[in-house]
Length: 73
Image (cartoon, rainbow, N blue to C red):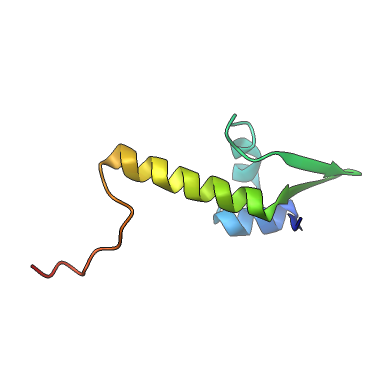
């Protein structure tokens, strides 16, 4: 298990630490671990959540997750 700090997690998600704390309120956001007074997130859980969220976003937009060929017809 590779545990990331809040700052590392925010960098992975490309958001601020403040936004990370907002995200953790979502029911589908990966579980956090408390070690002393520090919060940690498992990198594998975050990766799985990102993949799942990306698929859900693509499906909602009516797009496929396959790469495009650059627009050549």
